[in-house]
Image (cartoon, protein in one colour):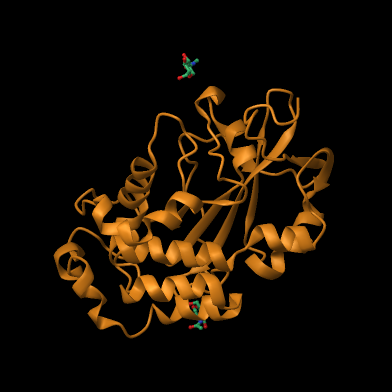
Length: 269
Ligand SMILES: *[C@@H]1O[C@H](CO)[C@@H](O)[C@H](O)[C@H]1NC(C)=O
Ligand SMILES: *[C@@H]1O[C@H](CO)[C@@H](O)[C@H](O)[C@H]1NC(C)=O
């Protein structure tokens, strides 16, 4: 319950800088974190904690729909109006095991926030299915680090990161708003985002069925201690199987589609 309350107050009260330092603080001390999850010793044989960098990925719902092979599988729940969490991925962690099962009861404390900020946008995939997939594919590998070493801590940390990396706000403040008419240049977007998310970020686009480049995702590089950027070069994770994303073109421009709940698949037809 303490964690829940502190998360709540963080979401409501604190400045971004304080949020990030809280996330960082979660990495230090807290030997008793192990009480909440399976002891690290049990997993350490199968999980070399070899990674140095994390990628925190946020997705833009209107663009995400365009990234699906079968676009009609996309749904945008009515409550969704902003950037969503896709995942927090240790880089170059080889296959995670599915040796640490996750149950909805593990993350019930934050379920309400996850539903709002980390919903599934795929019709056939429930929210929990999405979270479970992310935990099993990435979370278990991340769990060798203090502060990420249980499902609850992993998801709580992701929520705090999402709160800290408030793309919506900096984009709006920087005059970058969703539009069907006005495409943006990569340099314009980077000028606004880099101070928050660092210059090692990746701005990702997909090509829609009218051959337009459409912004759908942002990858933020983090060190193990959650500071922005990562000095190591093990960035490339490979592509997410369901997604056909690529870096947005550095020449030319791309679209930042508005979210249209009534026509999620064709917001700009
Ligand atoms: C796409 O998804 C829809 C809805 O589930 C399904 O009816 C259709 O057959 C799928 N199309 C392809 C090409 O898989
Ligand atoms: C975080 O880790 C990076 C890379 O290892 C290091 O350069 C930096 O000083 C660390 N920052 C803090 C606040 O510990």
